[in-house]
Amino acid sequence: MKLIYSNENQFLVNNAKNILENHNIEVTLKNEFASGAAGVLAPIDTWVELWIINDIDEEKAETILAQALKQQGEHDWFCQQCQEQNDASFDSCWQCQTEKAS
Image 1 (tube, rainbow, N blue to C red):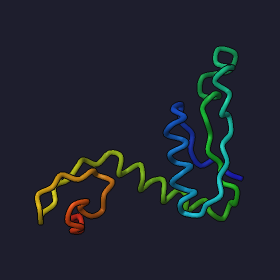
Image 2 (spheres, rainbow, N blue to C red):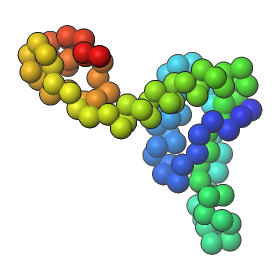
Image 3 (tube, rainbow, N blue to C red):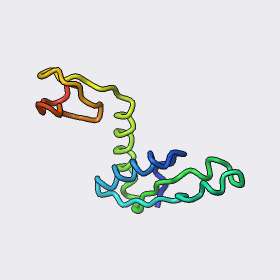
Image 4 (cartoon, rainbow, N blue to C red):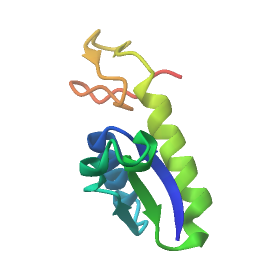
């Protein structure tokens, strides 16, 4: 098992977990309930951790998470075909299905 992602925000860690599971990568969470020890432990030691089960999935998981995190920093885009505004995570227009321009 290898630690692949950690964050103080449990929602973000669970989102990363869902992304990897959707790519058939087995994962598990650790420190889900460690926030109660804040003050006794260093704050970073209470962050939720996402671990991959099979070490051979490490490179694939890192690539998938890097792509997902990159998309979080992107901005919404407008379709060249129908001028509809689309969320940055969409690869094609939700209205007319035109592919996102590179």
